Image (cartoon, rainbow, N blue to C red; front, side, top):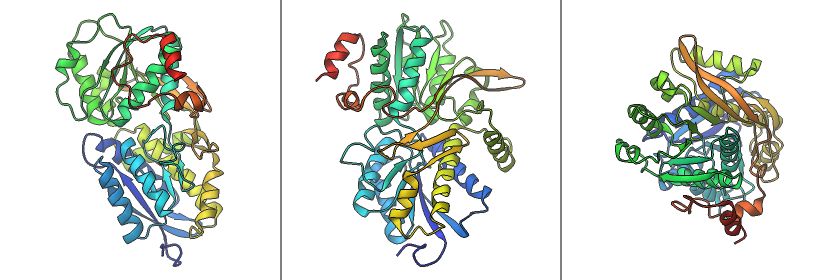
Length: 403
């Protein structure tokens, strides 16, 4: 029996990657969610909310084990969080069978999460972003900027490979060319061998490395000197903690994300002020914003059912009906219970004594199918095309997409 069913507080299991190369991403996301709970005095619809955090270590099997413990031992009412694509897929399959609500509020952009029968279920909702909803805009902006030849630098793991395939196919579809792919293993400490071989004919680098990998890559590429290739970061390499360490080294880098400090709304300003008050001197990131906005969405759904989360179907129906303003802007869910957000393009600029975001462009209603049809997505072997993009033409891509 869940906590709420027995009349006690609402208990939420929050699974995140809190150790390993992307630990800072997971911690930011969890802290964003708890900051939201602070804003409502840890009480929704008259019930206290208890958060039970769990560290998946970035490993799918550990994620499933933690999910089982939270559901079967801790008797949580719903699961939230999760950062990495492989963990997301694994836990989605578990919650489908366990029939427990799971609100994806972490950084998981797993492209097949809400459409592939192996993972989709009525118990799953996503409130963060999707691969096509984030990486299609990144490719579109790259091409609109005038870049025609790119290097794709992405970590050699689930999220990096899916991102490569989405970004590359979208860029080629618009008329661009991929001249090089580099895929260092996650956790790489020395990128020297990769950086020494960068193709000098490229116009720009499309970068998908998060956490400490992104930090190390940007620190080391800055140390090379010589030709400075423009960088379009669509993996969070210049998010909060990394940006605070990179400082002027990050100037000029373009970021593509679902939250930006440049979003000029009263709600977002109040959120940033609250974060600064709770964590003085700590840099804020998009992952904090996603965690907070996810809390807003889940909190609104719990409020809608008057705190009675024991009726799972009513809670799920309330989550499906999400259509609201958050610190990241407006969000709603589509027919697959997947997020329809706004994607932001910003540049790192000098602002007084600090470096911060300057907004360049926005892509509203940035859903999975806003830029290509579901059938076009399905025909690509997303995550399985590493090394196949160099020199591919638009005609070749169209033949590939036709199967």
